Structures are given as C-alpha cells and as structure tokens.
Image (tube, rainbow, N blue to C red):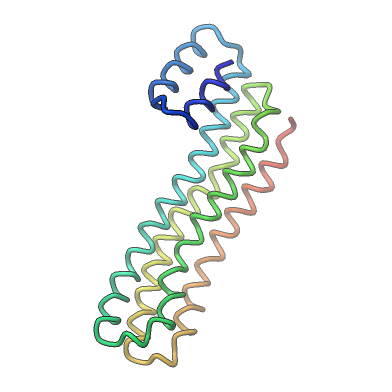
Length: 184
C-alpha cells in the first residue's frame, strides 16, 4: 500500500516530502521488511539519477562558460565546441539508465536484503557519474581553450576528455551487473 502512495505522490499534486514522511513513519512502525526493501531500492534509483545528474550539471558548466567566451569572438567555432560542451552530460544519462534498471526491479522486491542489495548496486553509477562528469568538464574546458587557438585540433580535446568517460561507462556496467546479480 505504501508503495502505491509513494508512486502516486510522484505523479500527483501531493507533495512528495509529505508522502515519503508518511510512508517512512508507517513502514518503520508496523510494515514488513519488504516495504523497507522497496524504499531502499527506490532510494537507490533516486541516488543513481541524482548524483550522476548533479555531476553532469557541474561538469557541463566548465566548458560551457569557456565556450561562451570563445564564441563571443569566433561564433563560427560553435560546431567544434558543441561536442566538448555536451560530453560531460552523458553521465547524467548513465545515471538515468541505472535508475531505470532499478525501477524495473521494484515490483519484485520482497525482502529488506533485496532492497539493500539494489541500493548498493546503484552506488557505482552514482559515484562514477558524479566524479567523472566533473573532471570531464574540466578536461573539456581545456579542450575549448585548444579550439580557441587551433580549431582544427578539436578532436584531440574530445579524445582526451573521452578517456575520462571510460570510468563512467565502467560504473554503469558494474551497476548493471550488480543489479542483475540480485536474486529476486
């Protein structure tokens, strides 16, 4: 029942904070461990999307600001700069994919241990997405500086930044394998 209330609040006008408070109060007071497991798995999905999304928002900030400065002098370099600005945003998508995979498992969560396992499975994509997006943004900002001086060298900046992407992909893969390893 609490699961329905929580999901209903997400898609209705009811404040989610009030619904979560109600769900947590009733779950901790009298609910079986399966509801706590559901809440933990749901929290894992939220953490995956939230942390990776925050990393992407911060990461895109660095090259976007640098690119705006370059574009104020050379608007024709937009095509060379676009990929460098957009690249740190991919981690947010990886976090969304991880959350989507977790949400697909929610109806099958029957124990506290399963929920905890799914929460733990969300951590690699969340942390790898957060950290790699920030550092990738810094690398992309350096790539923007490269394009400012030598527009024909843009792909070198993209390749250097893409090396950081590897770790976000690995975080998503680890989360994928961990999610699928949970016995439901």
